[in-house]
Image (cartoon, rainbow, N blue to C red; front, top):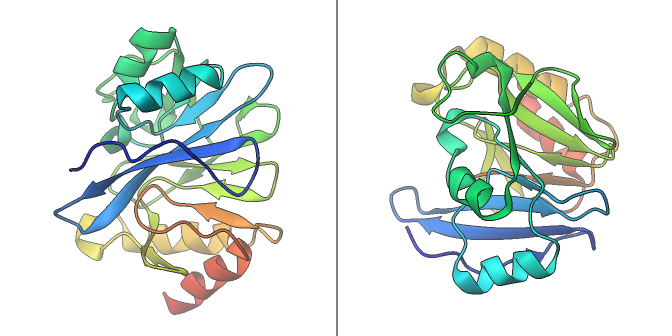
Length: 205
């Protein structure tokens, strides 16, 4: 896996992302930083180079870390040690999570105003989270991904805990009508017509 490839602004002035390339899967893994006056939020944080950590510091550091599933703990503990960040994890994994969390998120929970947790069923871990930001940006962990530019896909069947439940979760996400972007944890982000991309995925399953 390559080193962090720079903290870059995404489709909104308050959203930043950084990535690493995974050689085994031939795709990028991504993290998101939402900068806000009441404390920045990092989602599924990958390791940061010293240059990128300094950049994140200049943006205000990280007050809260949200982890969508136990396979995306990544560099959360190092980030917590650096900035004293609170860590929030998926309630569905509370009894088995590999990292001590300060709180747990389930369906419909408000992380902070404007950021809502959605609980997805059928993935490789129970209660995987997706996060809906301002009703217009969806941030996903493992279940919904994009191995090709502009096209979303589902976690491979061999990794799914329950394919029928996973498909139902995707159909529920496809009902979100006003999405501009889908920021996937694995693969290519979608920056325009996110709702349309989800509907295409749902119709293909």
